[in-house]
Amino acid sequence: MVGAMLGLRRFVGWILRVWLLPFSLWALGLWSVGSRSCTAQEFRTASSTTFDKWMYPFEFGTGGTRPVAPTFASFDTRFDTRDAQFLMGWKTESWVQLGLPTSRYILSKVRLSVSVSADQTFIYDPTFDSYRTHLGTNEIAWTRDQDGGRPVEFFGTGFRNGFTAETYANESPYGPVGGFTSDTISVGTRNAFAAVYDTEGNLIDTSNHVGQRNANWTNASFEAVPWAVGLTAQAIPGALVPVGSVFTFDLDLSDPLIAGYLGRALSAGTLDLMLSSLSPAQQVTPGGTGFGGLGSYPQWSTHENLLFKGPLLEVEGTVIRDTDSDVDGLPDDWERLFLGDLSSTGTGDADGDGLVNQEEFIAGTNPRSAESTFRLTLSGPPLQTELSFRFAPGRRYRVEQSEDLTRWIRAAGQLSYPSRGVCVWKADVQQDSSLFYRVRVDEIR
Ligand SMILES: [Ca+2]
Ligand SMILES: [Ca+2]
Ligand SMILES: [Ca+2]
Ligand SMILES: [Ca+2]
Image (cartoon, rainbow, N blue to C red; front, side, top):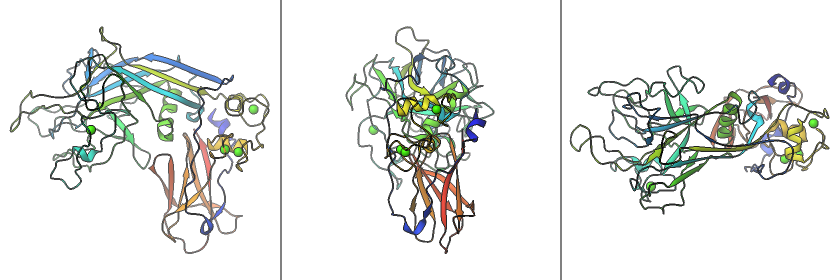
């Protein structure tokens, strides 16, 4: 099916004289697909976990069977800062057809609900806290946490030590754990970890982003923006959370990297997501080592819990299958979803934005919104070519250059994702002559 898509490769970039470009960013319009009444292949599910597992170095083999999974931080340098995480996994084959390209799963809602199983053990904070608020007060980058408590955060899941989403299961080991007297007991060793995408588009471990350091772990601090922050109507911000409160997490589907992660998971049939919080668990007594100390952290009901509801994931969207019954290059499901019926053609331009419908399909833009289109913008200092554009899930892009608009060659440079939804390409070499650039969708996955 990917092969069929590759046959549709076309240039979708605007050809631009770079010195004529306005220094502005065009916004990509977002569209809602949830409320349309159409006959495209919509799907909708509310599913408890296939498995859920407490990811803590000393779970002693019970991580996959406990009724309660706390999430907390350790600031003991021998452990990951995100010391106790809560992994949730779903097998998705009953939700929607497997095996289609990532870009064909167009989601309108992905919401997790989890129940609090302990009374008043943590303070409700509904907003993001920068990693800087966790630094030592003597560090230059430290800033004060402006609100009480610590948010509960929802992330993607990365794997190491040979495990993948498909192979990691309820009984799988936490990961290598050193002796309790060693310098590093579990820093950076967990087999499954809370993950975000970095600016290069790699899924990276957030477990030590605050800058926990020891002799074996010297990585720099970085901001790890979660894919969702937990909200509840049963507590007020700054107050203790009552037992039984339900927290909901709406994944940010406007982020193409997150949408791509979800699309890949639905295509492969396994979706893993990780709950985490930097709520403090005091594992070391002041001035020494040892167990105990008071913590202030949430405890979540797993699907083994008999008193409270376990995690529930609601997923809604539309899947775009291959069938193109009117042979206009637009899959029927896509035409129905975005254009209402099959009367449009691949060469029509329903929204008058200059991209014909087939180019909108390839670019992953909305053919009914002129705001949603594919444009290049020049940024960066003079003579240092830097192009930026809004990108879509599941596409691979290629930048080409030409001196005469006739002969095009691949332009040497690097793509990165410095801010949400924006792809930036930087030329490897500075150009002192005028060149034309275009960006094409090289592959749809
Ligand atoms: Ca806070
Ligand atoms: Ca069609
Ligand atoms: Ca158009
Ligand atoms: Ca459009």
